[in-house]
Length: 248
Image (cartoon, rainbow, N blue to C red; front, side, top):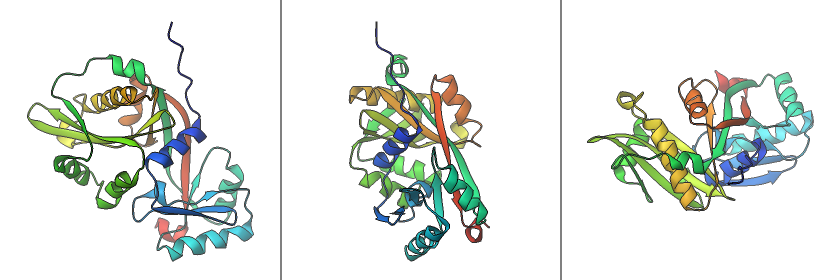
C-alpha cells in the first residue's frame, strides 16, 4: 500500500512559493525582511515580519520600501495576528486574500492526458510568453520565472489547433509550485485548467516531487472549486495589507 503524502502546512508552502517565485533581492532590516520585486507583483515585493514588531518598527519598513520605489506592502502569514492588528490600527487595508492549495502528485498524474494537448519546456516558447502577456503576466513577472534557481518548466496547453493556456512550475524541497496559470478567455470551461494542473503534477512526479501546491485569490470563483474538484486540499491562507495612500 502506498504511504499517503503528508501535505505541507501554510508556512512550508509559503517557503516553497518564495523559492520558486523569488524576489530580485531581499535583506534583513531590523525586525523585517524587505524584498525588491522589480515590478514582479505582490508576492515578490511584500515585506514580512522576521520577529515581533512594534509601532516603532513600522516607519523603518515603510522608508525601505519607498526607497525601492515600492508601495508599503506587507504579507500577513499564518501566526502574524499581532502584525495584522498593528497595521490595521495604522490604517492599512487588506488586499488580495489568497488560499493555499496542496495535493499529492501521484493521483493527479495517474489520470491520462490526451495526446498533443500539453507540452512542457524550458525556456518558454514565444507562444507561451505571448499567452502570459495576454493574461497580464508581463515582462516583470516573466523575469521572476527566469531568476528562479530551481528545477522548472513552462507548460503550454492546446485545444485542437489553438493555443489555450500556459503555466509555470518549479520544485523546491520535493514540492512543486504551480504559478502563472492562465487560460485564454475563449478556451475556458473546456477542461484546460485541469489539464494544466494534472500535467504539472505528472512533470513534478517525474522530477521527484510528491506534492504540488498552488496559490489563488479567494475571489477567484472558478479556480478554487476546480482545485477542490481535482482533489487538492486547502492548507492555509494569507493576505496583504497595503498603505492607504496606495490602496486608492
